[in-house]
Length: 245
Image (cartoon, rainbow, N blue to C red; front, side):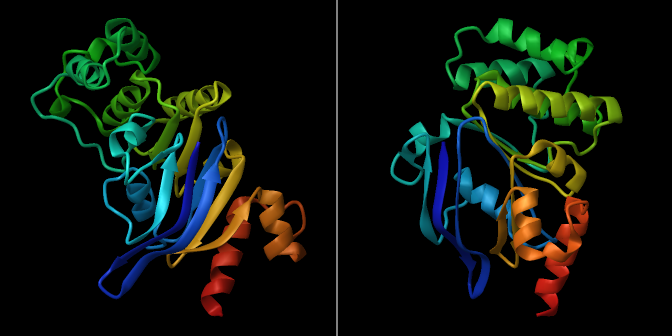
């Protein structure tokens, strides 16, 4: 569904992302993890066309993101790490706007379903200033799902959510993947990544440190830890070892 080949992003002499290549198949959930400053958000912004890569190629649904940006961008939805909403649009207005932008034929029906699904029905006429951080996050995800994208790009999707909302969000991500939607998510919540993701991509200083299932990464990088080691332990040991070297 999405493939990045030789992706690099430089700011002057600083390499935010260096020669990163990976792909995500339909229905697959891939977790993007790394220490602060590892290049996770830069990678997601390049994948979504918000910033152009310095070098490399990104293909989404068969469309080259640089050569066919409109067609490529129709394939995905992006939920950023910070909610960016329109101050003078209500909750339902935001959903209606997405419907118009993507020419969704059943905008009203889909919006009503999503309002109920994300417990926003009684906040439909509220403005962003009247919403909590968690409500804004739920609205962003509802907006992302409205046009039924083939790819979900999620940057810290559970930020601001209470435990019940977190559980429902995890279930919704799984449900989307079960219908063939590809998902790439970046999160510092390593337990979430371990629980949800089919594969994990670990970045450090803009470079790919490891990629694969937890078992594969554990066996390749730190076989001495044994099968009981969770992602948090593997991540901390691997990134610390890499830093020490």
